[in-house]
Length: 407
Image (cartoon, rainbow, N blue to C red):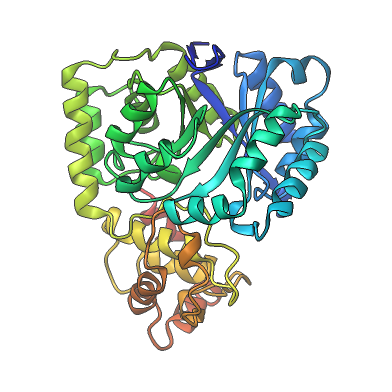
């Protein structure tokens, strides 16, 4: 495993970190046996940094249960203060103490203020955030302090200067090179000797697996043996200012591939031709992707039950993969997974424009407007019943259609 040093504290962290937001699930809950096996395997193969958050469901408690003895001593833990839930100073201390109990530790290695923009920082400073940080450090409850950034790039450096931060976590991938913190912001953080952690290197999976045909052809022509995920991860790890790239791995296939990539991709190791290849693919993706959503799920749960990430994902896939025709794959997916045919109803038409999701979105998307586009695209009168007929009455034909669409 390749390790990269944080100049500010001297810590040597694995280039690949394990993100615990997307652990494998079973019946809607963490598949504890599989997740434990994955995390132990990652640690055995050199991963020494694990990231979680108060808002990641049962993730902190699960990690506290499995990280014992030698596995506990081999990793640095990172978790986050749920800034959206902080109303007064006392809340910060309550959350931190609860997180220490959940993780079963006396001190948290890296503690981040979650989902920060300038407005959030100002609100928390008024509630004595700096006093809270200094006290928690002096009491030995946290070692290093930082924030995960979800604001516009013109605010990033203002927040960097608001406190003597140790680390920062940013969204960074070849598609989003100039959004949120941006490459200039990352350089600024590195100039302060801060550690820079990267989330969403694969943009919620959009930059891995199946891609638009033109994009896949560009990659295959450049290197037929390299996967789309490998291109994306290498691009991030190629940046010398990046300390650790976090990946939410929920299968051994993903883990093995990422271990191999992070082991051999050193800073500035990509050739000019490889960087040009990625730039060409980025242009193709920009022409096809309609909604710049990373499917992080921060907008959830919706008060009306809309499955916002899935609705947008299916909408994006329709245009990314050029799904055409009156009854196409995306339309079928829509009514299967969010339209109620499979029992789960979370379609875009349920949105009542309450706006509660808007302030949660790291991408600052106008989710209400985007859901209107999704509704207009898929929810025509009688659509559900047409597909229900296709599935229930013409099932043998339906299966053949799916096979053809999957080719």
